[in-house]
Image (tube, rainbow, N blue to C red; front, side):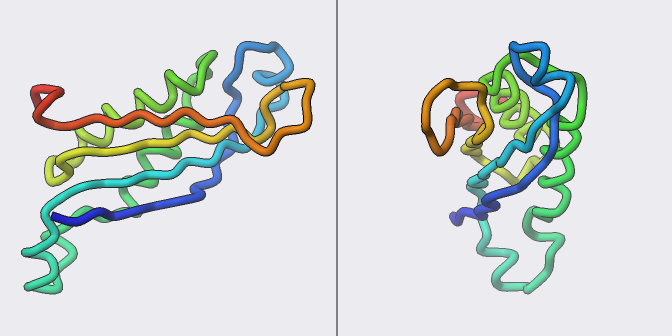
Length: 124
């Protein structure tokens, strides 16, 4: 087993509860941890035996640039479920959606939601 990490994927989206968030948009940062068996890929040095992380990134980008939702919780769960559905080699996924420009009247660095999904637990 191994883990492929993709961190700091930056995508502009129009999600949020407030009207101005949906009107002007903001940058979301996504961190992914993809668990899968990497032994065959390592032994054969063949990308077909692993997960193409560019394709995973494209799934995440399509979700963020897709229809607006209110909550980053919704984004994170949608991403995790879509990744498990579209990439059968992945056994579990951890998705963190960061919203560093959240409309909070305080000095802060980031707001984030992390979800984990497991293929076996999800019945996939």
